[in-house]
Amino acid sequence: MKITIITGSNRKSATSTRLAAHVGQLISQKGHSVVLFDLFERPLPFYSPDGVDQNHESIHQLRQAMQQADGVILASPEYHGSISGVLKNALDYLGQEHFHGKAVLSMSSSGGAVGTSSLQQLQAIVRNLHGINSPEWISIGGAQRNLLSEGLNGYEGGGQELHDRIHRVTSSFLELAAMVRK
Image 1 (tube, rainbow, N blue to C red):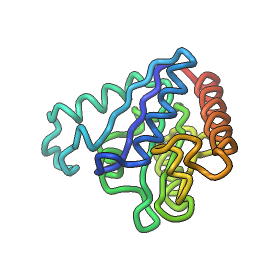
Image 2: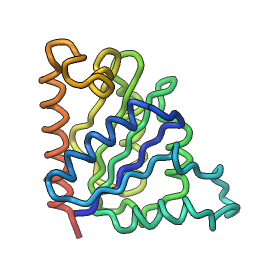
Image 3: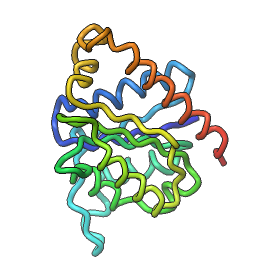
Image 4: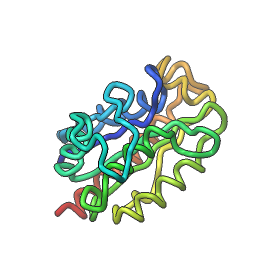
C-alpha cells in the first residue's frame, strides 16, 4: 500500500514530525510505500478560496501524494488545545476526493500531557472529508517525547509500553487501510 503522512509542524525538530518519521519507518519495514510530506520543509502559501497560488509546486505535490495514497496519517503538535495552523492550512487545500474511503490515523505530540483535543478535532475534520478514522490514535506528551530524541532508554521504564502502543496502533491502522482499500 501507499501511505501518505502529513506532518503539521512549523518547527525544524518537532517531536510530532519525529513521531511521524518513526511510524513511517515501521510502515516501510512492513513492505509499504511511505511519502512523508513535511510542512516545515515544504511550506504552503496561505489558503484562499479565490484560488490564489493554486499552481504552487508544493500544493501540487501534496495533492498528488494524497490522490495516490491508500491510507493517510496526520501528525500535529498541539497548540492551545488545537491542531497547528500549518496543518489546518494544508487540509484546506484538500477535499473529499483526497480522503473519501481512506483510513486515516491521527497523531499528536504535546509539551504537556498527551494532546487529545487536537486529535478530536482532526477526527472531526476527517469525518467531514469522508475519510475513515482509525479507531485508535497516537498521542505523546511530556516525558514521553524523550522517546523520540533519546530512544527508549530516555523514557521512564525503558519506554516499552509506549513502544508497544505505537506498534499496535500502527498495525491496526494498516489493517484498516488494507480492508477499506479501493
